[in-house]
Image (tube, rainbow, N blue to C red; front, side, top):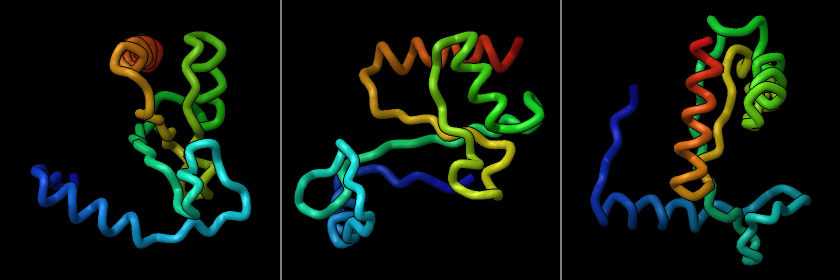
Length: 108
């Protein structure tokens, strides 16, 4: 697992690097800053290979049964099979409720 560096200098370095990456898609999302660069985004990946026949099926069943939306890893290419991407761009209460529902579904 990759290590995580914390502290203001690490954050400042990350901010500097992300400010230098141009937004290259012709379609801007609603999270775009309007400055030609992507807005902030926070994601986590979850391995679901042991829980579902495919990532898309897992995502659809999770949405249907728990009303929690995740992106199947296959939406990002064939190497994403067996993974789902979780967005962490929500308030703490919503994230905790989503995590509770996700855990209940994944462990059932």
